[in-house]
Amino acid sequence: MKFSPVKFSPMMAVLVAVALSAPAFAQQAQTGQGETMPGMQMPGMRPMNMDNMSAAQKEYHAAMQKMNRDMMQGMMDPDPGTSWMKQMIAHHQGAVDMSEVVLKHSKDSDVIKEARKTKEQNERDLQELQAKLKKEEKKG
Image (cartoon, rainbow, N blue to C red; front, side, top):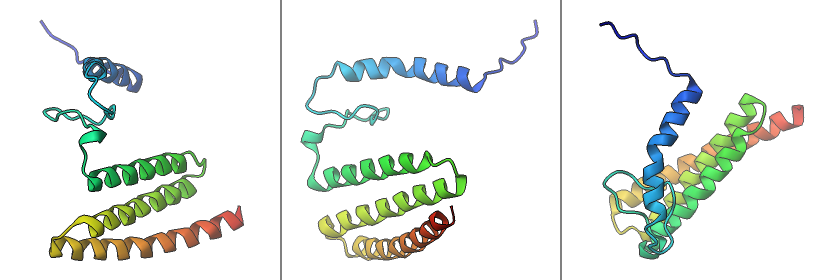
């Protein structure tokens, strides 16, 4: 007997992924442990709970939430180039914000050195992208 391969359309792939993840979301909804963060669990990892996070973890979370929100907002620009610049601005700002968290909380001199370097490079990239975006918006 010969089997022919199943061809999945992109929509079918999304539906299969949603169906396979439904039990995990249902289990998470039933945990009732403090303030959990939906969709942030990975296999073998206990549910994230804001109540049990350190100050640094909470600050990282806030920085990542802001970065993700701003990247998604930038993605909605109809011009691909402008969209990319807006997303990258949010990405570089996220790197700056996360570097500031580690500079505030870390005691490791090597990590602090890398965080300073990362922050400085991303601030330069941010300024360059913001200037290009401003120039593009004046054209349009």
